[in-house]
Amino acid sequence: MTDEAVLLCDRVEGFADPVAGSVAERCDRCGESVWVSPSSRRMREESGLALSPVCRDCFPAVVAELPPDEEVKVHKLTADQIEELVAEAKRRRGSE
Ligand SMILES: [Zn+2]
Picture 1 (cartoon, rainbow, N blue to C red):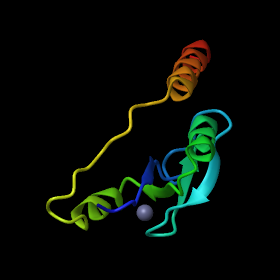
Picture 2 (picture 1 turned 45 degrees about the vertical axis):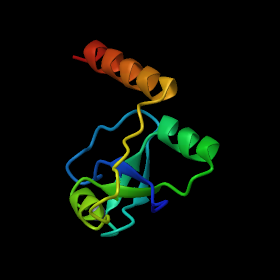
Picture 3 (picture 1 turned 180 degrees about the horizontal axis):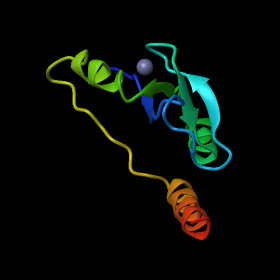
């Protein structure tokens, strides 16, 4: 079993309006700028895991490199992340 854990992120390019408070970090694979939201940063800190940001373009390669018998685990959204997404949806609705 590998311990590699990544944070799936949207690239900054072409995604001008991320969740409020998002900061740009670098994709661990291609070096492109990606958005990391406040709740994801908190989750990373609290988990104590390295959680490298990886953009959506690079994510399939990360999965493809796993040994064939490796189980891909997807963490559920944290309550914090869900709250952030709801607040973001409300903000967008309010600005229409
Ligand atoms: Zn990438």
